[in-house]
Image (tube, helix red, strand yellow):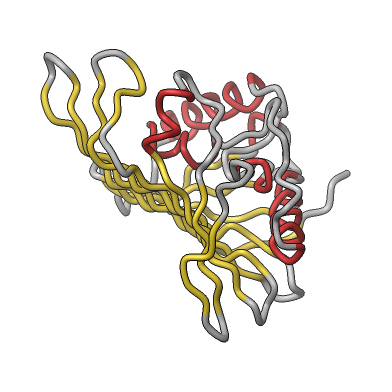
Length: 232
């Protein structure tokens, strides 16, 4: 859905990096980019209107076994469900040019439109930055003016704690689909040992699809039980 696209579809293809960004923010963005290398196994817990699902991801396994469905709405999944889910995920990963997982974040520093960064508020612990996002999605030039981004930078730990994208006006990303509300959030924290990881994503989407009616999606995904893996 489009809320997910807004977070993971942020890109820097053909985009100039803003050389005026504060050095501490540039360093924090560079740290996020290290998440591109999948060296952690973890559990993914997702809740939306369809219910709850729990999956285990291990990048050290063969492609068709990296994702294992653990539970569906509190019950053990059927064997056929596990197989279908693994095949679906393997097909998506193998079809991606980078071969990376959905949890991978893009070049964070390249999502900030040059000249758009501004300080919203600042105290002893946190700096809240606002910015205009750059997206690599269909009809990006039409969509981007309707969106605003926000970064939360923790001074003490010298890291980005949160990335948020919201719409300030309704927009039509594709024909016959009008989005009235969009909220997409990614939350980060450090694991023991100082490793930065994506721990939570939230997505809210409300809109209308012509000839169909109102559409609504509210999804939260939590990443937990991280274990660093060793590749053969």
